[in-house]
Length: 307
Figure (cartoon, rainbow, N blue to C red):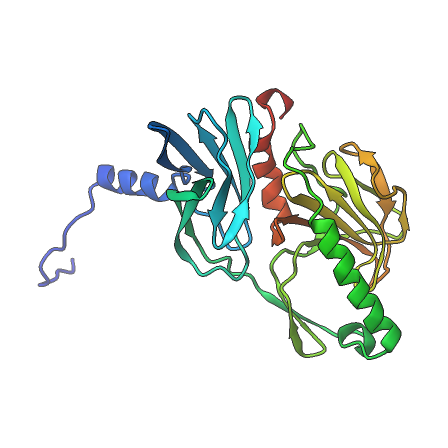
């Protein structure tokens, strides 16, 4: 029998170990805070309380007799909508947001105060390197540059057209049941040049496969863009937009009201692509967020009976 002259170390007790494991594996609770309005205490909850870079956060404000005029987070103002006796808003954590604790401010007119604190965590997204025709990476033709300028002006109008009412009453769904070939947030290098991180997910699909609307809303754009090809953008209210890009064919028109699951177009390979697929994205108040995570978060925005 072997023996050791080293002093015995502190032993782990099974009960303590199980308690520590339970704490480490416990799901994060929503952030909660309070603010005063007219002498009354409000309750402000944020879900998730520890969002990743590139994730949406649903904020619920209860206990207010009058609607707050807005929420502020990382320098942006967000609108709130009434929802069964409370008010709800959707914040967006930019991919470039620095990790750490960040305050959510609530406003009544010119008065603002911190109502909750979020802890932003790193997204830890990977990267990819693609080779594309030079004109699709760094356009030089005057006709292409003119189209890109027109596209930017058009998209500014599109993303500024949302109303304060939520236009859907059922959670978001996948527009195409398929395998993800490019995840959200991946840093991209095109022909060796660093470009913006991937603002959505790419879903594998054959040309002509139907693409469905993720949720009810109003078609804010149905047309062709230089980089995105044939594109459909749906306004779901409260500055929430879904994007469906590189379509071979569009089957809706500008201003049309669409329902969840309605066919809005077909998979294609138009625009800046290396092959047929669907690019699906969610943009909130000008910021791209993870669309897969938003499917879960959208359940917090609709009545429980509709989930």
